[in-house]
Length: 212
Image (cartoon, rainbow, N blue to C red):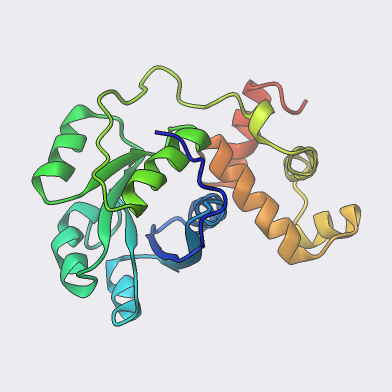
C-alpha cells in the first residue's frame, strides 16, 4: 500500500493522545502532512481526550504507556466517546506481546514509534480508510533511524543550538525566526530522533554524527 492519493480532499480529523507534549507535537506535524488529514487535535491523556467528545473524529492515535489510564485501558472508553473513529495504539515498544495485547483489547491497529516516517504514513493511509493495521513484523534492531535524511537543514541547525544549551527564545534570535517556529522545529527533531527531551536529542544526535 502506498500513499499516492495526493489530490484527495482533506476531510479526516485525527485525535492524538500522548503524555509527552514534544513528541506529540512532532507526531502531529507528521500526521498533518497526510493528504487525507484536515485537522489534528491533541490531548495529554485519556481524560483530556474525552473533552473532544461530540466532535467528528475519524482516527484516534493512542499512546500505549501513559500515567493514569493507559492507552490499552482507554480503548473501550474512547470507542464509546468516538463511535465512528478507528482507534490505534502508538507505542515505543516493539514487543509482539504488546501488539497482541492491543489487538485483544479491541484496537484497530498498532504503530511503533520507532517506525520510519514513510511507514507511519502508510499505516495512516490504511487506518484513515477504516482498515486494520497490524504489521506482520515490527523492526527491533535499530532504535533510531538515520536522521540525516529525515532532518532538514534548519532542523539540524536548531539541533546544534540545542546542544549549546540555548533556549527557544535564544535560538529564535540567533536564527532570526519566531519562538513558535523554533518550537515546531524542536518537536520535529525530537520526533525524528525518537526521543522525549532536548538532552536525549543531543546525545542521540552526537551518536549519529549529526553534531559535534
